[in-house]
Amino acid sequence: MQLTAFFREHPKVAIAFSGGTDSSFLLYAAKRDAKEVRAYYVQTAFQPRFETEEALRTAEMIGVPVSVLSVDVLADSFVTSNPSNRCYFCKKRLFEAIREKAESGGFPTLLDGTNASDDAGDRPGMKALEELSVISPLRLCGLTKDAIRSLSKEAGLPTWNKPAYSCLATRIPAGELITAEKLRTTETAESFLLSLGFSDFRVRFLGGAARIQIREEQIPLFMENREKILAKLKREYSAVLLDLEVRPR
Image (cartoon, rainbow, N blue to C red; front, side, top):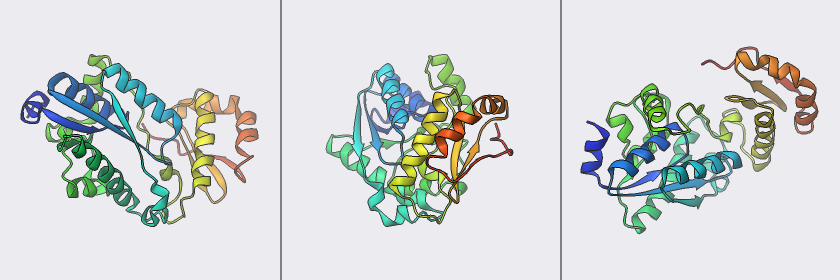
């Protein structure tokens, strides 16, 4: 099936929009091919401010207004206890909020940006999508991540080469309690590295230390800014460690 055919069958849709490469392309395609589309972005303690701002700018460029919903994920003990399947509990909570809002607005068909490259066996959150009858058109149409990036580039979307960005909760090891303070510390550290020119990196908790994962080509940038990074991050972490097993491409 082609996306154009999908939107002929589903002309009125709601989209769970994150601002990433996949959901941005899906929003673009829906704007182009569907008769009516609404976008919903969920703001939680797991999203840093810069991700929210980028997402809203992208939606504005595409020309679809976004309803921003707030969900207190830290009020859910199943989420904050941080089990290996935390994403299931979190995603179910978020998509229940989106579905309720979308249906009240007359949009019962809810879509998300899961693509054909996503491994269902490694993503507990996909179980929640199935339970809530969320449709994943990119996956249904066989569109892989590489294909979506290529099509996004052709469409002039700024997200075509955007690195994948997992939520802040992923920086905290499974089984370790998630707190607002740890999330705030992570956001501050990653926002600082972003301001120095880093991209596609992570600052993870390792005990009380910061374990920084960057691309190999950005190691020189790290060394140039080593003193600045130490001075900033040691205000919040007991130590600052550079992971020499660099982030893979």
